[in-house]
Image 1 (cartoon, rainbow, N blue to C red):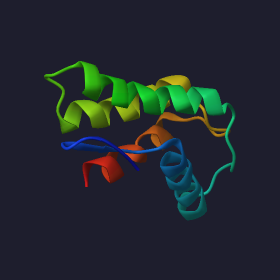
Image 2: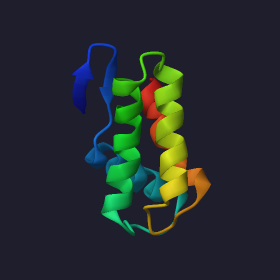
Image 3: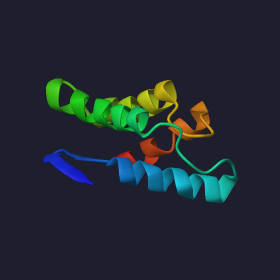
Length: 92
């Protein structure tokens, strides 16, 4: 995880890939990533929001992870259900 501000600990691309692998192992689906650049963009969008929007809170950043992963669809089995996997981990 990447520490940027005392208030947030951000998920790295590797963290999200690990969560995706765990989800596939638990619930089935296709292993693999379709486009790493799309995943890097989605993960970076959450960090960007936290760093450049002083009003952003934990919920805004968690929503940014979920939204941008769903929007970019970087995984081989790209569904919006997979996009929710980073959110609970980030919020815990």
